[in-house]
Image (cartoon, rainbow, N blue to C red; front, side):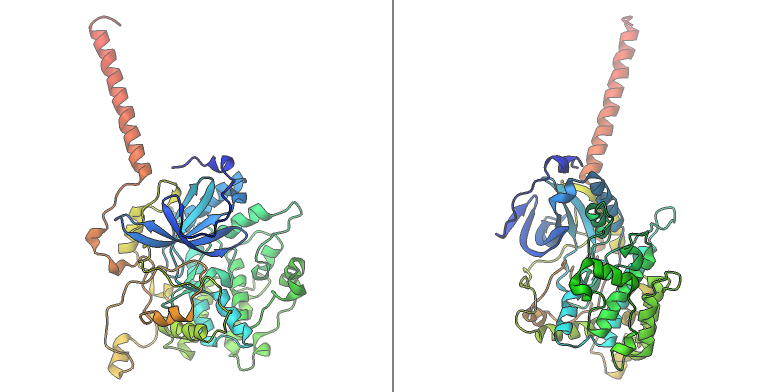
Amino acid sequence: MLDLRRGRHHATLDPVRNEFPQPFGPYELLRRVGRGGMAEVFLAKATSARGDKRLVALKRMHATLSEDQSAVAMLIEEARLCMRFHHDNIAQTFELGNHDGAYFFIMEYVDGVDLGTVGNLVESRGTCLEPSIAAYVCAAMARGLDYAHNLCDESGQRLGIVHRDVSPQNVLIGRHGEVKLIDFGVAKVASRIQQTMAGIIKGKYAYMSPEQASAEPVDARSDVFSLGICMHELFSGRPLFRAVGAGSPYAILRAVRDDPITPLHELVPGIPLELSRIVHAALERDVQKRTPSAGHLAEELEAWLRNSAPRLDAQGLCTYIRRLVEEAPAGALPQNAIATPPLAKMTGAEYEPSQMSVVAASPLELAEAHTVARPSPMAQPPALSRGPSQQALRASGELGPARRTPAPQSVRVQPAVSAGQWQNADGPRAIAGPLAAASQPAQDLSWRPSRRATLQFLWVGLVALVFALGWSVIATLVKIGKL
């Protein structure tokens, strides 16, 4: 375990290196896959508990964070919350560590494209996503948010988790149709660091809720509004607030708070009125009139999907995204669209905290979630829990013979993939849990104590031994009359 004050003394990092691979503590950075105002993200190689090499996403925070001790404390607290998540629509966070003053996250690696890239592709063509595809993705996002919003502590009290940065860039669509949210809690830390004395919040202004844009307290309904902005853009194929005032932050924040929002069915001819109603209920500026929860929003979208696209599933989403990527013009995809190395992705059952860990998920908890915890049917993407059964489809000849569902691919953070990558995938697969329970035999899930637990055990034993020896010496001296 590292001293949390190290960041104060070692906040100056090495200059940004572009040569890869490069070492970073016990990890090997293979390439950079993204960079933002708070951090840069790398595809990295880590060693599993069994000694095998596995792929992870390593998010290294910028040095500015280490200089603000209150922000560091907030980051640690948010990391503790994120490590409680075990849901198909949230990318797993394994560890928060510190290496030479640089705080970093170790996360599930998502091999796919972010929703922002998908949105840019359709916007550049002057079109929009098919309504059923957009509704499917947004329903999965809402399910992930609802899980986080309702997460409770050991006493049954809600933890009050709010994402604060629900935007297309923080939604990943994996190669096999997985939809995963990332970056829970990071926006809260960013606002702590980047808030000026004038109270101006820096960030993704165009996806803030009115109360967030006004620097007021927020709750789960703030995330519902942000998801409403994402839905409006996906269904319409055009920005809602991003283009206001030529991108001026002040103009965007004012538009988020005050500008009228044109009904969706007036912008997109033929859009179902029910979808337009669902979107605008989420975009109510009065929080009392807004869609009350992400779970309620998911239920409305799923109900529409059952009636309009009952057979849409992860395979359908995968096929649609693959075709979109294949048709993308040259240069439309980010330059980091490089083939993934032929290594398996790290799963929760294989993960072991490093010696640089500040906060880490318990291997025992990960194993228990891996073998026991199962999300409810409502937590699955809509078409996977409703509609015609697999047996009925096979009987009608619309579904091929039964086959074993392979383990899911852990998916990478803020990536993009080339058309060749999608073509080389071994076919769409059904979504399994993020911890890939079916792929590991139960007997392999042996738990080994963490470094912290081992050190604590040794210290307790040493103190007990010294105490016993001390009393023995005193008793001997008393017996021989020396005391």
